[in-house]
Every structure is written in structure tokens, then in C-alpha cells.
Image 1 (tube, rainbow, N blue to C red):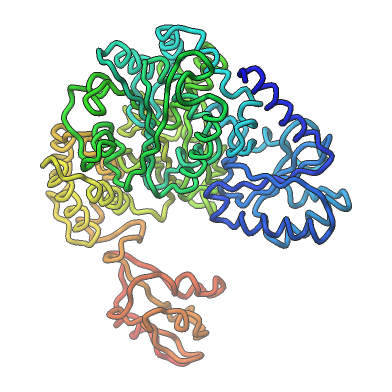
Image 2: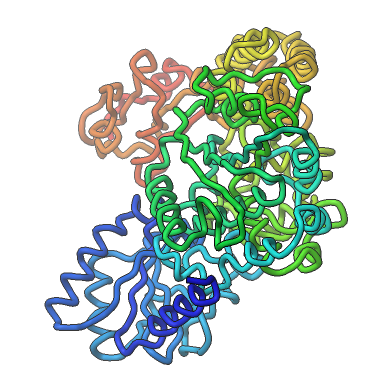
Length: 638
């Protein structure tokens, strides 16, 4: 069967699906949806449909990006736009089946938006939602719209047309097209994709390899996982194009085993590709041979580094080795090897489907195209977003993210994962691209973006990220192995009130040494959170060291909880909820916290009724002693 016939059949299937008399119900079942209860909702939907004798098509789709609104369920009737409902519960499912499918009331009060052509009164279009207005979805173009386990859905939306175009070009022409697009690697370093391919293409060797780096391990990052769960074919098509361009006949997808859903959907996609002659020998009768193998990693963060990943695929311990030689000339089993990450491959397929000029029309002069970010932390609208390079941090945090939760004060945004930097309010108008973030001391990285508020201690945040990179260090080189351990000890001392005045200078000295002398990028970028927090939040370090006080009241060793005699009503709520029985006092008696028993969990502060506000959290020199409380009558009867 020719690809033209495959595409014709796929479009026919898609149109029949879209124009069917039966209503269509879409359920987002990427990991974020499943963890929010989407699978239980599917059971509820089937039960309600059966009970009401309604025929409808239920389809599972991937993540559209609104993680804060999960679980999402969309309903489409023939001739009407698809309506997306957010934070759906089993009770809401019952209401939607009765009100919309039976009584034709679309329930605008429960709807998030409409998707597709047409309008429904009282429900905004998805393009008008603040979270989506600034976005340009290229890598994520199909996420949330298609069934990730149905190759025909991908093909009907122009999928694999990029491969067909590439197969009619020479390898040099494909590489030139990628170079003209300005695409840079989306895995962290931002190296020119076209240049990287050209190095591998020009390398001598009778066999070449291609690798998709799906070893995403940054805390708070889920870009690669969501893309593979939602639209695996966009990535696989990109790999085919890259393999044709460099002359590779075998490829690997290196993915961490903690992503079981992504792995399952990749396996399904690969099987479907084989049936359509899009994989294996003599692809589509062109003489091009390419096979893909899935390699499951054991979750080592360092294996995201190219040379460590190569070692792992070869069956060795995942540890980096010095470069040169670079993988492009001597990589997997000593052969020329090209490695790009998940998002890069999805962009490759889009570029060949459209054009280099189209892609280069987005972004900035030096940072072309778009970038996906996992927007997480203390922001109102968390989720997966894709924005043009050059958008400001303020637009991401406030326009897309909706600002800080509970109307608290923005403090910093950490970009680039544990190897990135923490940027303060003064950088909010900074354009997000490779050059500007690097100048500010951070990186674009793979796309993690964690927002913090005024309750976050920046010293403790730097300690947290350094504890992660230190634990993930492979231990091969001394600067990373010993240097990060020493830095972590110093940061721990500071957060526990044992910091010394010389610690700040020592942290700076160690940071520079580790950056210069580490074998790989894990060690080379590990000090970034420390360097940026010292650069932008020096006063917090000084407060911890000189005043033994945590301004954010977050470091456990430097805080205490007390009950204020003038406000306590003796309601016993804090006493009943204290997990360690550290609160004394009978009903209608002012309570007292035993500081020797208190584990500083903060439960008492959380449960104390807001009308009383009798519990306070203090730090450092502000601490109140139990004697002071007793002296003002803490045990007096109300």
C-alpha cells in the first residue's frame, strides 16, 4: 500500500469519526489525568451511557497542558464545537450525560472552553483562555487532540508528510533545512541541531546510530513524558527524518522506566509503524532502512548526559567520559552517533511538514522557534505550555500562569531544572531565550520552570537542588563528587543555624572550581542554584548566618511555633491535630506548645481557626520563650 493510500484511508477514518451522528467523549489519560482520577471517570461514563441507553464514542487522548484543571473530559456533538469540562468528578459526569447528551443543555457553568469551529453562548474558545492566548503549539501540536494509540489520527493531521518530503530530498538538503530553521537542541545545551547532524553525517564509519534522549529527570519537569504519552508519532517521525539525514540504520529511545505509560504508547506506535512500512527495511519502498529499539533506563539523572547514556545503552555503568571524541564522531560502540531529545525530534517533524522559514518566523534572532515548559510550583495555573522564544518571564508567570497562589508575593522562578538558576522579581521582564537566561546566571535547560512565593527560603531551595544533584552524581570525578558534598554540608549548616561568616566566600570558591573542573554538565551546572541565590538573595544568607533567622520562616531548625495567650480560645483543635502531643491545655484553657516535643510540622498553624489566628510562627531573634508566654498568663483560665 502506498503512503498516499494510507493517508487517504486515515483521513476517511478521521472524517467519519468527526462527522458521526454519535456524540464523542474525550478523556485526557496522560499521567496527570490518570493520577487525578480519569480512569475511574471512564468507567463512570460507560456506566451512565449504558444506563441511559445512549450510544457514544469514548476516546482517550493525551495531555492538552491544563494540569491544574485535571481531570478533563470533552464532549462533542455533530455540528458543534467540542466542549472541555475541567476538574470533573463522577457527579459531574452524571450531570453532563443528563443535561447535555439528553436534554441538550451544555452546562456553561461547568465548562472550561470550546475547541474547534463554532460558538456556544457563555463558553469561551480555547484560544481566548489566558493560559493559551500567548502559546504557539508546535511540538505539542497534537497533544490532547488525537488518540495517541491510533496512527491514523496522526496521519490525518498531516503526520509523516515531513518524512515523505525528506525522502524526496538528499541528506544534505534535509540537514540544510534543519539548519535554516534555526532549531537548537531542546535538551539543555541549546546546540545547533543542523550543525550537530552535519558533524555526524560527515563522520566516517560504515554504521551510524541515532538516539532519542527521553531520560527526563529534573524535579518538576514533565515535558518529554507528556509529549510521548500524548503524541509519540511526532517524535518517531522526527527520528526517521534524522536517521535518513545522517545515514543511520538503527536508533534507540532511551527512556526512564518510571514512565510506563509513555513506554506502552511508544511500543504501540512502533508496532503500528511497522504495519504501514514506516519502520524496518525498505521503508515505503525507498531503500531506506531504519529500526528503533526502546532502552529503559534505571532512573539515574546522570544518564541524561550523552556519554553516560551511551555507556548505559552499551550495558555499562552510566558514567560520562571525557570529550573529545564527541559522540558525533565516536559514540555508541565507537560509531558516529547523533543524540537529540524528545522535544527536538517533535520539532524536526513539524519543520519538514511545514518549512524552515515557517519555523524560523517564531522566536528571536538567535533563539528560533518555541519552547515547552513545565510550569509548576506556587503558580495558579500549573501545566505544560509551549511559547515562542523571547516571551518574558512575567508573561509566563502572570499571563499564562495566572500569578501566585493565594495572592502571595512572587519571590523567584527557577528555570532549567536542578542545574538552573533562581531568578528574582527584578528579572521578570527578561526575555526567555538561551542568551538572556545565561546572562542572568540560569539556563533554558530541558524546560523545568518552578515558581516560588514569599514563603520559600532561597537558601533552603538552593540546598534542596544541590542535594538532588549531589545524590545523582556518578562519583567518577573528584570536583563533582567531593565538591558538591562539601557545598551541601555548608548549606545544611547555614539552614540549621550553624553557618559561619566565611561560608559565603567558600561556597563561591567551591562553585567556580566545580564548574571549571567537572567532567560533565551535571557537575558543571550543579552550582547554578547556589550562585544565583547568593547573587540575588545575599541578604537571606546573611540573615541565616549572622542573625540565625530565616526570613521566610521555612528552615525548621530556625523556627518555632507558639500560641498567643491573648488570642487562644481553648478550642482544642490544635491539640487534637498535633501528631506528637506537644500541645498542653484543657478545654477553655489557653494552650501551650512544648518546644522540646514540637517537630515544627506546622499543623497547629494550619488548623487554628482563622477567626482566632492564635498560633504564630517565629524565627531567629524573633523567637518567644516559653517563660515569656507564662509570664503573660498563658495558663490563666479564660
